Image (cartoon, rainbow, N blue to C red; front, top):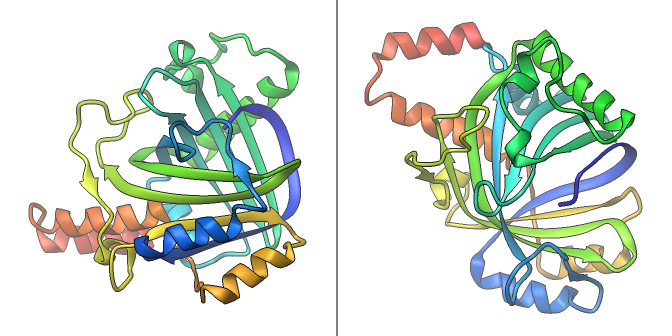
Length: 269
């Protein structure tokens, strides 16, 4: 959860699995000899809340690039943790070039985060080092060039484990998924209505599930392969942002004329 402006150019294994909640204790016990609690987690289980403002273009380019599984794509987001205002804000750019993951992440104090950082011709905040400033300017350039803006907010509770001494091994369980369609750069959904995404319908599954994510370097430890086989874990392309977007479009049918929705979908494609 700690932020840095460092560019991470690595070939990584990143897979998601939808897990029945009843299966989590057995998986947790199985992997316990190989992982430790994420130091940022609170409580008996290493948990923290993640709130993410998802950006997209007017034509939903980031969403459709993921939906169509383009080999080369990227996404932009703004993220914070736990109670709003208690943690810094992180701007993130994550790109995928076939099997190569490129990610930049820049930390900004919460009380320094504002819309002027994105749109002002001069930066009103002085970054701690040149690398962070460069990464942020690149994030801002991508926002400008794609005309990206806040579209939807995702919030969930994450239980997180890491490999001892292994910076790239991380296993997480995400639950209590919800979204807010009133997205801005700075509010993070505070005071707004949130819609649950915990149902099987929202997740594209037979029943309510927990989203398990495994991240390692290209080399996957044998114990993880054995865990996947032992519990018959099935990889899924589950995307929280796309799930929220499609679910919100279903709600919009109740208040928006059908022809208007169909026209907007056609033009976005």
